[in-house]
Length: 248
Image (cartoon, rainbow, N blue to C red; front, side, top):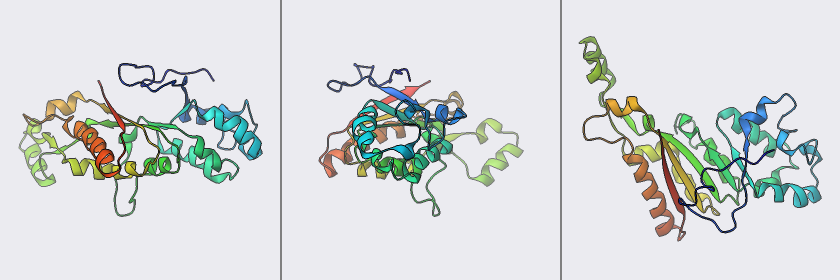
């Protein structure tokens, strides 16, 4: 697999880790698209082993764990996540390799539909928790998730029936607590080895257009950065780099 540039490793102006390795991105969506690539026969490992069921302790120590030091796993959907979970949890020989996962990227993290009584944890963060040596995680949000309608359902329908369509679409900010709790972000503080948290926010012209005057949809996003840094420093005695990036 050819190395793929990591947007944060290559940006020395954003942060610099000493002797950072060249990062190879393993795109799980791509892994799933190949006919011969399955959770038991992942494409990115076929140079070393035909199947994860063939992993021995020697192969794990001499081949897989050193390989994982330079990998970033890009997981963009529930199907991607299930592929990863099957690879590491279904086949016991691969479970110890979870200790080798150092970097995860969730570029469609904002697709998560929220914490609720039947889903008390975020499955993407729950998987990351099972990677005890994880040092870097990337989470991408969207301004559609930092905002909510100004109106309740009845008021919005009344405005639409009155022909006040622009007014009916007006948006306001969610509270910082609403934003954090929706994604179950408190679990980040359980990542004992984490050093870098990359926060990205996908901007939306439609969201910006419909915002109530004086409301900026990126405010909860930047508040999240400050909260993560503060919580790690004050409650966990840990200095964690938190990068932020807005995506047009």
